[in-house]
Length: 470
Image (tube, rainbow, N blue to C red; front, side):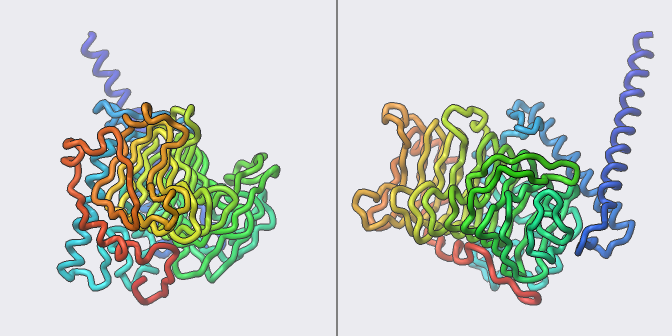
């Protein structure tokens, strides 16, 4: 009897599981059918079959992510509760670092062997920029990420939404064809622009999950108003934008989805604010001169890559971690790769708290106070960067431990490997930074830092034209 009862329970469990999958598929098909968006088209021509195919891909990827988290938990890896109640698996950081190194080595080897006539050794760019048909293969970009944010797929499996209207007159009821109308939708979308635009946002642009903003093929500026907020959502890609002169806004109602709008208090004026979000990739943007930070990630945000950006004319460039006392940021993992930190910068490139930060193959040509700082015991892994110190003899140090005694920070794991230190620049390591076990974790040597100028030569928003490589 006990065996029969057990068998019945197993059959019921299997049946319920099948019903659950069917309901998820129906929901995905339903949401994929929301086709009344101005300028929207299906990637494969708009047939019902392609709509179903996109829904299946969306369901497959969503299921895969849930399975990955469950598997990580079963293996004993940590899965930290996210601010929106979801769970984000905490990856083995050294394994991710090794994957980044492998991508760089492979791309560099292909360049040296002449396999890519336009290749730079930058594994992200070499993944898509050589394709003269990039404008018809836009969503391929989502498969080119590296580092902790490499799984951010954005709107890869959704429709193309073409922004035709640069206006932002009503943040509660945005017009179809505007950027705000695109980013608040519930289904995955890959958002592009019909022409060059300067978009001055009246209030924060609050992103919904599974969105890509892709500025390639147009000269798109988000400037002189509010800027981008990625809050309590997942899978967002920001690519190819000029974001500058962002100002504090707020004390207003703002829509965040088709079914919700609410009161927003004053925002700081960041170019890109990442708040309690995961799987975020900011790539090939030009950012400058905002009221607060250029890229700030706080409140338990994780699985982030910031790559190929050009930062200029700003004080506090990048804040990663909310406060010394906010312990959920211990799960924060960020890759900072192939960026150019250029003229007019002062500090925080980045300023870190608690988490793990891989800083690889960036070009630091300007800072006035320091380049990389932190508090609350972050792990900082600096590899193959080029640090050019300012002429000020009192600002030669790359690193700064913020308001912390040496007796405390000497145990923090701050590492420098293969960095090029110029004009008197020096990096102060600590903790396990020079340990033999660390050196075994990667094989990125000084040779890579000698290629930084080439790898970062295309940093910032690119000028891409249809019919030619970007």
